[in-house]
Image (cartoon, rainbow, N blue to C red; front, side):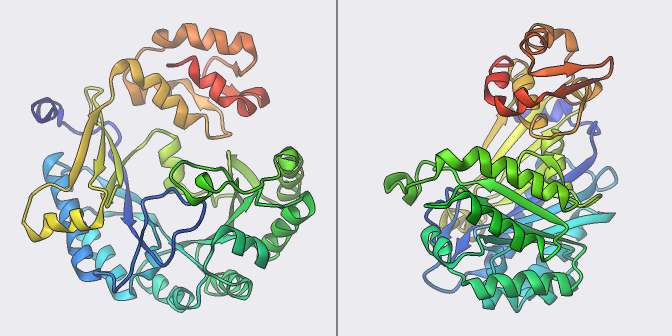
Length: 395
């Protein structure tokens, strides 16, 4: 594939890049978690990992010939695991190192995920000093019993303190992560969680249903989930958020005006991004229509071995997206958003003619999953509720 890449490595059609940075360690694995996270039983090798992350970025820049005069970093998302376990000094070193390699957009969004544990809360002000302007706090619930059911390590008091402090410190954008459909949760409890979150006036709320994923503790020891209440929780919660000044812009995301997560918007609009760190994913589009996806080495030990042995690539897989798969991949991302989809976006970002998808589009219109104008497609309420059925048409 490298020969093919070299032929197509002209200026990208979409030169604004996002960057995802994965920090794989955490204190404890939550019972529902299927992310690439690893419980740290000793001190995290912070310095080694920061060096490896920056070298990983260097290798991507070199491999894909990402000319510094062509690209600006649009957003950075530092996720995990628990990235807030890293010291402020390590986070600063990381951000400075990234900026030296690819310049930042003037209004760049830099997000870090944090848990509301006291050790991590003490680092909040340091994040601001390092250039981070958006913080995403994993509250999940404001009820002690529910936190225990989920296997969370923080207490209710810490959740309240973290939400309050983030607001006082004047982060440009504060997201609170909340889940509903929790074990033994009724409608009133779910809406009470939402009420408490709204009281902190966050600029952004991620509010999503707990689902049981393979390779999680919940998958093997299934809890009782309130399936009969999910629709009522979802509809009443949506109404509550709307009345409180939040707009739903994505399936599970609500924000105040102009406070959408720019990093996630780039994902769902089928934009380009690099991924560095254990198990991280990337996507690059080239001018001739070639789209590649990258996956980095998953295990922290193996990832750091690359640094120790001076092996050049942190790459685990590099996949070419075939033309036949582009429509499904495009709409799988684009239809997560509530906003209308410009038809021109499909052509620009896949380099395919709209005629190639005319049959599934016609079927989707006939079935009531979509409406259209001369310039846009719009997902109907039916399309939102039965998104998987709609997407199958594009496979």
